[in-house]
Length: 340
Ligand code: SER
Image 1 (cartoon, rainbow, N blue to C red):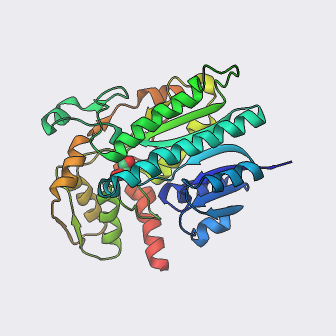
Image 2 (image 1 turned 90 degrees about the horizontal axis):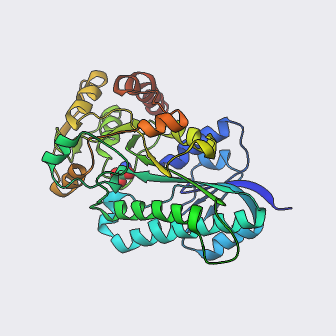
């Protein structure tokens, strides 16, 4: 008998950490992680095993396929939007070919188990591309089917992988005699910018918000690379993880979409800084605009409509902006930097 496991790719990344924390707290002990880098002790202590390697390495995935029975895959490995603009071809390989490899592993596993494998895919507000700032300001909260014209390689990759998820779930090899429909149970969320108290993002374009608060907590200077009026939605890591757990636990019959918008709060960078200053009045933060990164933020929506997630799987954020700071970010960040 192969050991039954839950697989998390990109386990040493930001959402990987959040997931490991939460699944481990729930008593789940059969987590296997994959990451390019050796994960830190926090992750190593809370997982059954971590494999160091690349999701593009088919031999690595084949070893997992042979050794384990995979119940669910949380596929978090990706190159984020800013980094992807510097290496678009590598980003495409990691974000698209890597996802294809994991979807294929899910299908092989589901076929051999004879039951579905749940597949969680973190998509992003980067799949949207609003042509002008005027239009962005005019349209307000947008629906899942609106403005899917991504302007970044990362956004293109995420949007296409949503379609791959649909293909593997509903149309896989439809000309063959075997019916594979429903064997891959693909579920995705288009995340806004995520702010963790415990980790910092690497290579994203929404990084200015988490970077502001962590710099202020460490009494470091920070140059915010977008204008004070730049606005996109954000949420706390705690809410992001709660959303993943809720969506993954929902009965398939209640889901009407493959991929859902979710939201919590959407301050401008200036409003976010004012909030940071309520807790760290001496915060030393300037606005030094990077026009290219600003133009990416300008193409992302200021707000999204998440009614369908609320309706289908009971989504609602625990943290608005005030609660995010008062109940999560400030207490956790203070204890983190006081300890170190
Ligand atoms: N936070 C991501 C980024 O900035 C978007 O999903 O790349």
